[in-house]
Amino acid sequence: MHIPDGFINAPVSVAAGAATLTGIAVAVRKAANELEDRAAPLAGLVAAYVFALQMLNFPVAAGTSGHLLGGVLAAVLVGPWTGAVCVALVLLIQALVFADGGLSALGLNVLNMSFVGGIGGYAVFAALRAVLPRTRPSVVLASGIAAGISVVLASIAFWAEYSIGGTTGVDLSTVFAAMVGVHALIGVGEGLLTALTVAAVLAARSDLVYGARDLRPTPTVLPPSTVATGGR
Amino acid sequence: MARTTSRTTIGLFIAGGLLVSLGLAFFVGPLASSSPDGLEKVSIDQGFDGSARDHALGDSTFAEYGVEGVDDEGLATGLAGIVGVVLTFGVGALLFATIRTIRGRRANASGAAAPPA
Image (tube, rainbow over all chains, first blue to last red; front, side):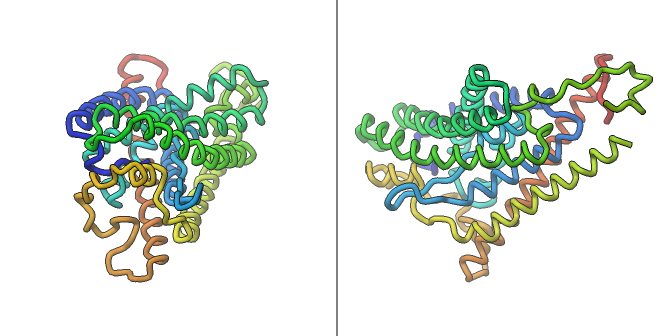
């Protein structure tokens, strides 16, 4: 899913870079509201975990592999905007330190994976949560399905970018079918890995899952003078 | 002190999460499929893979998840993975702590209830 230099022409890459920079500025502001006091190292951990999982290409079809993108996973764990910044950080480090993902395509890659996949996928998660029962298994199920869909969304975003800025003339409808087809398969892996991770964190520390914060027991609101000693 | 206990547990949670991430990168990373990924495969099948240019930093120390000078490919991948996990965690924790601190200052300045630093 990492676009190399050269696939997409300069004008579209630059436009995507500008859109992404604006998006990151918005995401950082909104992340400040999502981040709870203790959550800074937690968000760092989520980014590090996404980095590790992105290394683990699994086979999806003959001669093809895929790996977790992590946008929905990060969004469900630490919040959509914080998650988008996490994935952008991973993509930045991959492009600068590991020569993975073109430097001129960094804006495109962040646009596709942080925003279309991450924020778009989180919107799918939120919609699913709204119709599913308010239980932990619903959170796991919704995160898995949304994660799978997010990979297809990101692949369609690439297709759209290629349609306007592709440097080689190819049949666009064939590219669309091929992109969606292979990424639907990769999406199955994305969904499973996301659901597994969310289930594991829910089991260990359910209070640390942003996408399940409505399921936390309602804390008793105590007057300030009693907070120091107050329990539940 | 309930708060202290809760902090310790979060510390343990983060330590555990880091260990899992490091373990996956070091031990499973070298076993990852080296087949082209979805986009690469589509570009090959549809005939636009030729437009890809070499990465500008393709000769850097950890390019392509290897380590310059380490010939054992599996070991190099695992070590590059450890570098990546540690770097991402470090930069991420620092970045988010900074974002949170700036928010705290803004809240102070505007007179709103500031979260404890």
